[in-house]
Structures are given as structure tokens and as C-alpha cells.
Image 1: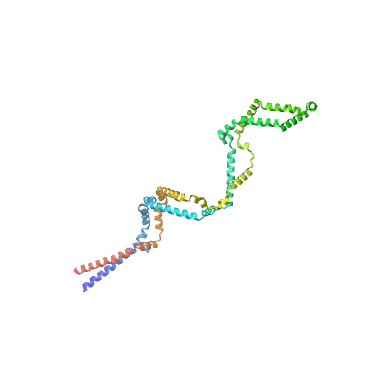
Image 2: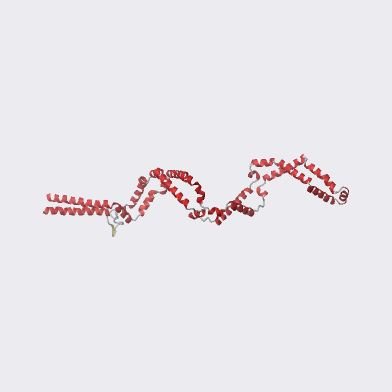
Length: 377
């Protein structure tokens, strides 16, 4: 009886020691969180294993995530997988249909992106840009001549039209001189001419008369104008003038443009063609809904495939730019030890309990074996 009690006692002691040591070992994974000092002497095994190796664990965990868990190959495979692409397409289609139902106007869409797009502000912006663009175009235009501004074919064609212009000028002058108004003008000029000649002019007027002189001169002027030499002279003058005009900058040809009047006219014409207030009040969906089927059936699937294909080709660069390993390391290092302990124990509490019970079992068995050996010896 005494031997049995001794063996039982040693089994109980061994079980308590085994269970306690396993429990203590588990706790020492985390506790204490900080090193414990007795004066200047640091207590061994403080801090706990995980707090002591926290930096190394964080670094290795980051490397493990990048090398074995979230690898570029796995992300690329996920992006190009058919299920993921179909889910993305469906998500984009649902988001597009939901957006169509919102009936947003242009100012409302702009407000979503923190942009103020009211009618007066839009008009002010347009007017400002018209003024800026007008000044830029005017400066650029006025520094050029017709050779630079107009196409070469247009300049050459204009030069070839000079003889026709001369014919037109001569024809108009002849028509004017042959008219009653032209006759009266000639008669008046002759009258002024004779009046300026004093007595001799008065005598000529008395004997001949203004009317008869005008009747004689009028057809002669027309005849002289229709002479080939007259046309050649006019053509030569026009060609000379055209050559000078071609070489002059536009700024010299149009020195004093009414800029404010032109800008005001441009504003008026533009706002009459583009009713800003009415356009801003129309829902954006009114412009898009007509293409709804095409967007859903063609554009979204194609954009999704091309977008995911583009992202899959940039996975290596994205991971390198994000520095995932460094990000994981920083997060682990900043994670509170108390929460980390609760998280790990919450996941592995059953296993740790079993380890404690295993220590009790092994300690008890070892105690029994020791008791038997003690009795035999």
C-alpha cells in the first residue's frame, strides 16, 4: 500500500510539474512584454520570446508574405482568371446602371469631385479663355505675312486673278463714266477747270459750253480706258501693290482692330450657339443612355479585359513601389503586443490547452516510471 501511494504521489507531482512547465513556456512566448531588471541585472528570459524577436519576426513575416503568399505570379494569375474578370465586369455593369439611375447633371457631377461648375462661373471661364486665346492668336497672326499665313496655292491663285481684277476695275469705271452720273461728274470737273482759267476759260465756256465738251470727252475717256495699254498699266500697278501687301506683316495691314468689340461679338456668337445654362441643366445620363447597350455589351467588357491585362503586366512594379514587405514589417512592429497575444491565443487556444494537458500526461507518466524505478532500486 505504501509503495502504491508513493508511486501515485510521484505521478501527481510529475503531472503538476509537466503541466505547469508547458503552461509557463506558452506564457513566456509573450510575457513579459518588457525586460525586467533587478537593479542593473536583467532577469533572464525577459522579455518574452515574441516581444524580444519582434523586429526579426516582422521582417521575416514581410519577406514570407512577398515570397510565398502575395507573390506577383499569384496576383497576375488572379487578375487574368476568368471568374475574377467576370466578377469585375458584372460589378462595373451594376455600378454603371446604378449611376444611370442617379440622373446627375454636370454641376452635380463636378460637385462630387469638389469642383464648382455653376453657370456664371462657366461663362466667366469661357470669356476669360476667349480673351486669352484671342490675344495669343492675334499676336501670332500679326507677326506673319500673307506668304506665311495663306497656303501657297491660294497666294498664287490670287496673283493670277490680278488681270481679271484689272478688267473688273476698268469695266466698273467705264460703266460709271458712261452713266448720267459720270457725265455730270465730267461736266462739273470741266466747269471747275475752265473757271480756274479766268477769262480764257469763260470765253471757251461761252463759245463751246460745258455740255458739249463733256459729250466729246466722255467717250474718249471710255475709249482710253479700254486700250490694252491701260489694262497693262493697271495690272502692273496691282501686281506691284500685291507684292508689297504679301510681304507686309498682318499687323501693318490691320493696325487698329477693335479688340473689345471683336471679343464681345465672339462671346455673343458662342453663347448663342452654345446655351450654357440649358446644357448644364441636362442630366449627363441623357447623353450616355443612347449608348447604354453598347457600353454594357462592348465597352465595359473590353475595357475590363484591357485594364486587367495592363495591371497584370505592372504587378511587379506595383509591388516594388508599394514595398509590401516593408509595409508588413511596419504593421507588425506597430501592432500592440496585447492584441497580438489575444489574436494568437484566440486562434490557437485549443492547441495550447492540449499542449498543457500533454505536459500533465507526460509528467504523470514520468512520475509513475520514477516511482517504480525508486521501488525497484
